[in-house]
Length: 616
Image 1 (cartoon, rainbow, N blue to C red):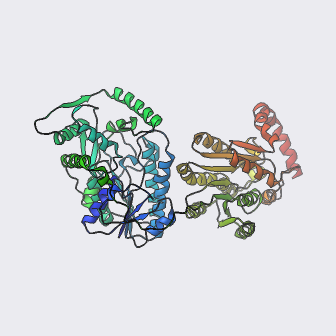
Image 2: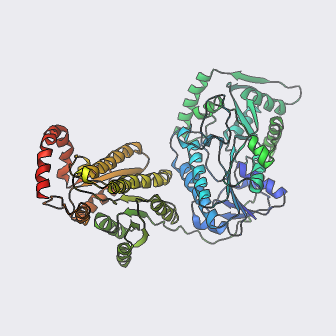
Image 3: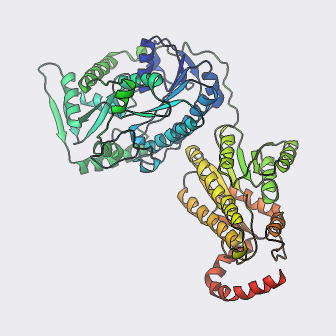
């Protein structure tokens, strides 16, 4: 038996029909109350669930040999679409992970030709072109690229998966009429004059995509990508084919009016504004028009050679599509809808379970990290405690649980990349993603930089800077996909004020401050915030560790802030995100002192250091 997600959509309907024609038993995963006209009358098992619900995925994948993952959201509108990002990226990552954990034989994922990087015009696009979220022309392209990379990441962990990148999909079985191209074909079928633009693209029959998926499930090589192409055809030629098959013999009313591309782009901008204001579908946008003039020199040799894939002529596709659209127009609406939910099993009343909020706290074995973890546990977060000392973490986890909270222990060394990956894998195994990341891990060294051991230099940069950046980059796509999340980096006042005798530590904190500020600006308006808390001296084990690593030298500090004060600032950032807060607030003058009196500190530093060296 195979599982098909997104089975009621355009490609899903075609795939299911191809599978049934070969006698394959099909289980479909559909949303509760989803419109299922594409499955009407088909002998399939229908299971309700959501690809964002891993429990539903595990249940749906029981006894499954191959998973065909098609579920997703398509949008040609510009701008951010958090729901599309959530479904396309996080949902695909969940399907791939559960497929690996469920030991399915193979997963076939339908990506998109637009998920690949965009080489210059005239350069053939083949499978050597990588997935690139940064060269995407639109939000949809970016989500498909990120999702494809997520599938490939699961392949590295043992999943057997094959990825397909179809070109522009056209053909019958779009029962919901959600495709802008299908609606355009319907419009062209009507007599009269129609506006067109000069452009071309590679279009493929939806039935050929379904056939390619079956072939990929049988013959595709693990971890490989296959481009599923059809025929490169101009807009004018496509229009002519539609009118040829749509018009009655002897009747030739109307035709195509070719408009300048610049005028079409202006109309696209107005159509987009209209669609956003009135919440209505849009036929064409700047993105769709740019696609028609983009590089469409696509090489599908690999799929033909390795899979035995053979696309049909585009004339056949247009003929069948026009005929199918006529049938749908003539069908009685009530009959088209049908009693299509009769085979959905009765699973009783739906009960939505609250998803626990998840927070990761690094450096949680002591000090600010431990105090932050305790507070977040009391606020209802499931806290993932990260540090090297497992005994300390277990004690803290037990304390949080006794207080009625939930805590997990991940004892790893963050200076090792495998430790960072272990944190990410643990969190993604919990559920939908991460809500809060508190980067509190770090250590310092006090003395002349020339006296610092080289090994200490590498470890400090790895823990204070590299681990912080890697954890953020790993978790940020999930947060962006869900449209919410908060990252708090525990910095220091010395990040704003270059501090002699702790030069490298000061530099790592300056990195954290700059990285935080840049991300705060980059993510503004996305629902995700990145903030920094900059405490002065805090009464923790930090200073004992510094003294031990610095051969007994101690940092001259007269007044300490308690960790709980820093935790209060962290909680305030969760409630009201800001780029940075100082603890105590009086230290907020330090950047201004550095800016206005830095020249004086430059001259006095050597005298103060010689005095401090004599004391040490």
